[in-house]
Length: 92
Image (cartoon, rainbow, N blue to C red):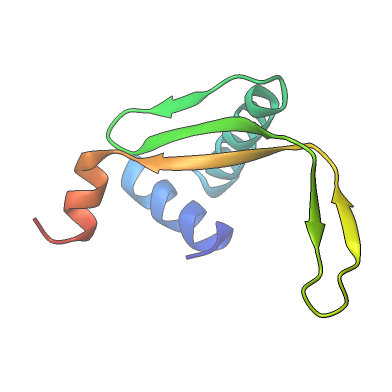
């Protein structure tokens, strides 16, 4: 399912115009992005939670030639599905 499919489905189920639905989707994604960028967590009831976790810098070694490479520190986002979502996907 892509953005176009989501907009079509939501606009039909919520009786909204496609333009209003597209604006709502863009705004929602922007709010989630801004929250994660600022270090906050996003929890959506019955769906799951998104959070940003820091990964420390580390050194790895290439097993073929023994060359060491530095991996810089970075923040990564993670998603944890709500148990209701897991059950729905698994047919329970």
